[in-house]
Length: 105
Image (cartoon, rainbow, N blue to C red; front, top):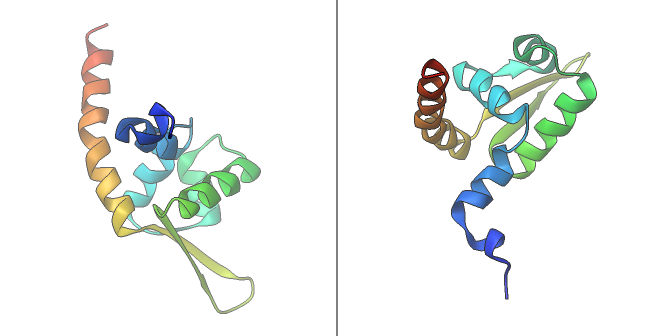
């Protein structure tokens, strides 16, 4: 029998975005696709190692698409998948709630 956290949709969704950096990565990619270095600059404060790991996890979860083009150096762009666009839209009300909470302090 599956554990309760494995069948609760909220827990499953939070497992996809539940890290310090993933919501920011999604927010940046919602604007447009980015190459790795420009994504790192846009996110700010994240190491290359952590960004690469977070992108791999988001790609594994079907939220981010990694597209490698021809050329040297390798031209890799990251963008949101359709599921990532849906997730970004769903996170907008949560972000607004967070802003309201912060203003209320």
